[in-house]
Length: 364
Image 1 (cartoon, rainbow, N blue to C red):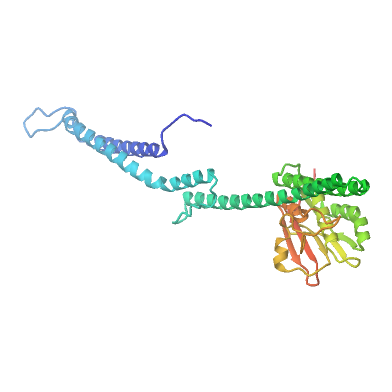
Image 2 (cartoon, one colour):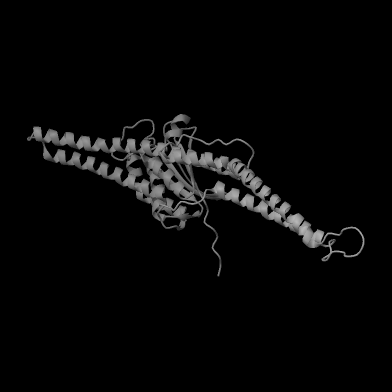
C-alpha cells in the first residue's frame, strides 16, 4: 500500500530530545528568574548610598544570556539527539534489512543480535525464530510438492501405458483394461482427496466444537472391521470418555487413518490392533497400537513424512497413498495437538495423539 512520505523516526526522536532539552532549560531559567526577582526591588533607591539595580536592569542583563543559553541548549539537543537516536535505532536498522532480505525469498539469514536482553533484542530473537519456522515450512512444502507431483505422475503414466497397449493390441480383453484403469483412477482420486484434506487441515479452516474421541474410535473401528476381518486382524477398542474441541470430520478422518494404517501394516492372519482413549492432566490421548515387524528408530522417525509406507513403498489395494500419518500429524497440529510414534519392542508401532481437553461446561 502506497503511503505519503513522512519524517523518519530518527528525526522525530531528535526533535523530541531537543524539545525536551529546550523545555527543561527554559523551566530552569524561569526558576532562576523568579528566584532573583525576590531580591530585586521594583524601583531604584534615589537616596545617598550604593547603586541598587532594579528589575529592569536585571532583565537587560539576564535576557541576552538566557537567550544564548537556550540557543546553546538547542544546538546540543539537536546534535546529541541525532547521535543518540541513531545509536538507539541501530538494532532496528538490522531488523529492517533482515526483513527486506526475507521479502526477497532469503529465509536463511538470521539477525543474531548480540548484547543483553531488551525490547529490540527480544524483537530480533522473535524474528529469527519466525524465519526458522518459515524456512522449515517452505522446505517441507517444497519437498511435499515434489513428492505429490511424483505420486500423481505415476497413475497418469500407468494410465497412458495401458491406453497405448490397448491401441496397439485391439484384440486385448477390454474388461481387464477397464478394471486396471478403474483401479489406477481410483488411486489417483484417493491421492487427490488426501492432498485436499491435508491442505484443509493446514489452513485450519473449520468450525470447532466438543468432540468425544472415544466415540470416534468406535466409529472408525466399526467402519474398518470388514477390512480387518479379511486380513485376520483383531480389533480392540477401549478407554474413557475423552472430549476435545475441534472438527468432528477431521478428527474422525485422523482416527480412521490411524486405525487403517495399523491394519494394513500388521502381521497377516495373526495381528491385532488396540485403540484406547484416556484423559490426563496434559490433555486427552488417542493411542493406536498394532503388531507387526520390528521397526528401527530411524525408520519410525520418518513415518509421519508424506508418502512414507513403512519399510518400503510397495503397496496393495488397501495400503493407501502414503499420506496416512502425515494427515494425522497435520490434523493434530491444526487442533493444537502433538503426534508421537514409538516402536514396540515385540514388533509393530504405537501411535499416540495428544490433544487439549475441552473446557468444562458451565452449569446454568
